[in-house]
Image 1 (cartoon, helix red, strand yellow):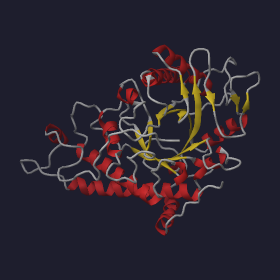
Image 2 (tube, helix red, strand yellow):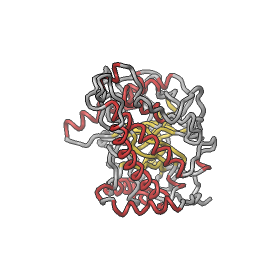
Image 3 (cartoon, one colour):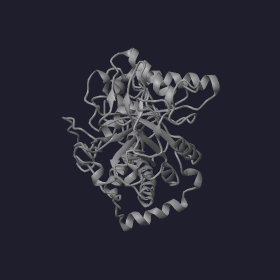
Image 4 (cartoon, helix red, strand yellow):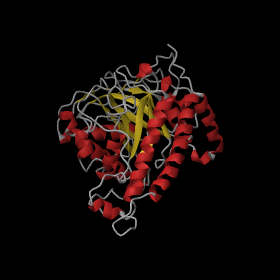
Length: 416
């Protein structure tokens, strides 16, 4: 089955000309950016034969992050994590009978992608993944397995590494199995991964690795809730999946990006965490619904950017609230993440990048107007951020209401 060729409006096609004026150095992953484009790759949900190689997506200058999907089984103790990709680039590892694979060709493509300025992550989970983490000790052992198999450890020949000595740039948690004890111990897993790479970086001057997650849009995600609420759990990015749920952009009254942005501003351990609007790249990519045409998706992204920017301007750099993140000078919006790469075309990702870039420029301009229109205090002068906090106001200025109200009541399964 060929991928759906999404039709782009004339307005979006015209907006592609913006890319002509973006300096080449601005293209590629920027963790502080608001126009990053991420693609999940590996499951080939469009059922293209053969699946387009990872390298082909890294040749697109408008794609910034590739998320290899998935490590479908995670075992602790003496067992190992199992990589499950819909690709012929992986074969059973010599001497293995437990599902371990080696992917030397894919390893070369990962290196190529990194040379193009992309970040390549490996995602743990998926809708049918299995986890056996029943205690803090097992969480620590599982983290060690991932570190040795895909990140900076395990290069002594004692562990089968699917990509050989090639390391991915981080690990993503896409946890969709039914909730249970497994959710309780993920904070230990995350903290252990982070401690490994901090130690490695300190000893050898190596790069930092990214820790990300792909929660469902219902806040807080049931399985990731302990990690989201636990101050040990550092996340660099969240690819929030606004589909197969009622809080998708197609349901504006329940679309709740602002709820996640408020968590990022007030509760995240990482004060500079980036939030991505996760979306299906085609109707068939989201069997339970939530597909939004690109124009609708970009409108939701623009609204979210602007609300986040207004909140940032409103609190200001003089904020003195108890939360250490309340004065954060950054915008938490990070970009859009699509499930999955097999449905996308170069024109589609280019239009996405261009639309996000344009939306960010508009959001910044509007926030300056918003700043000039701040309400005055009792003495006739503009109130400080500290004054506003003392009055317990929302993150948006007096007289401005959020675009959407949220009625988050129930959890639906998200990706099938």
